[in-house]
Length: 339
Image: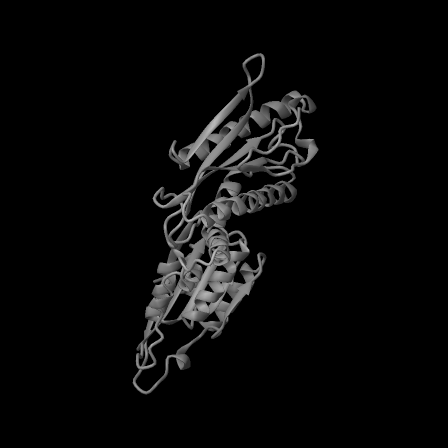
């Protein structure tokens, strides 16, 4: 019989070719099992048992056939609250099932399902927001799984899906909550939640920062459209120029007042990342009588560089005279300037 979605959950429609291991050769079966177990061990090492628990299905002869990874997420009711915090949160569960032909077959796409575990009943718009959120969350995760399968001809995708779920909560959940609160006539969420801590920006016209700063930040990847939009908005707000190289890996290079460079770094480090690290800093004192803008080396506007643009970013840095920052970020020794 076909399983239908639960009352408070959603199962994303999947490709019919999820597959059983009868479709695989003996060598493919062994490879699929080995790779599934290795990926499960990676996930279990990265999360606590409260955050993730794994269900294992066995065949008649006791061999491992498939796994389901259950990730519990908290949708915070207060902006800025960590995804893992259980206080004032809607509790949901994301279930990711690994088909028997995963990850060796391209058509073995992960089966993703979401459900609400618990939700505050008051105010009433919170539960509506949670119900609206579940299919969107599952859809975002399913797209990530399908993209990984299509780009790699199969391949491990569970980690990418879990990261996509956390990024979605951090970037999209507050918008859904605001929409439902607005429809309900509630002003519980202030406009400032769209850019948390925006009031820390240096906007005082009487304030003069006498130090020019630069920061270069390395990330495992920058893919999510919402994160890319927020980066550009934050850089504009803090009057920072520079570049964001998207894709794998991601690189963020900003230049502007020293205080605002640090504010941006502090802000983005609170976002959900698989890996993020400040790998280089530069500071220049502004001579008396000169403006900060006159000392900039990078474009005054924040620009995005495509996924295959690492060499272009290197060229821009070389031309701007900040190549050492780039080399430091990529952990490349610059023998030309070594003592």
